[in-house]
Length: 311
Image (cartoon, rainbow, N blue to C red; front, side):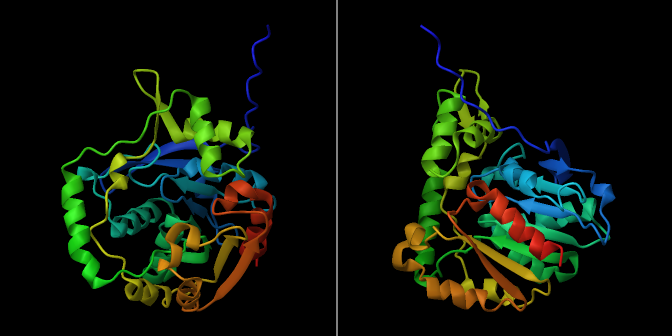
């Protein structure tokens, strides 16, 4: 009997180079498409920042789909602290301001003089929006892919959140192991059924690492699962969004639905009111795409980005 055929694996059109840079005492993993030093006002560096429980390699399909930009400008992605191949945070505590400070330190090293084009997905989208408000001179164009933010927190939630955090600090959080790379790929497809098997097979070894016992573990600090003791303060976030000076592009998938994450705790009207605070905003929707729109429709997203970035 013939052995089953191995699943096909996606072949990158423009493979990335892997690099490491120390930022604020932590070793961060960078993925580079083209030399950073080649950036210029005409061809600014495009910086891509992933979401929660993701990695920088997640943008490979989007980079491959870019045409006019792809071979003409440098592109860089980074694994946030505690994700991918970057170091975990000291004490395994993750605070939103640290992501902004890591991004600031990154730009100090890779683009100290020239503004960059800055793109973030989901959690990364929220980071870049806040960053562009407090460092407007460092951002030429800003792209937010489905960085909706969180429901507005109530002050009365604070004691319970702190109590939960203290309890969880005494526990050892864990992420489940997977028996094989194929099992990791199947987990990716289960999370996003629109992800094709060849892309899932390519992502799996970038998203996980084999352990001494032969199992595969996701490349994420389990401490990310702990409750955050700091409440999300909508008014403070929106105050920063009002200060963004860069032309800003909001992109979402037509199959995304806030209610699937938050139910009625975060009405769409609340998000639209927040987004209306951004001074120079363009909104676009990608058809046949969900939250992971850079996986679902990289070609359509690439055309959208090129139209915006080449203006």
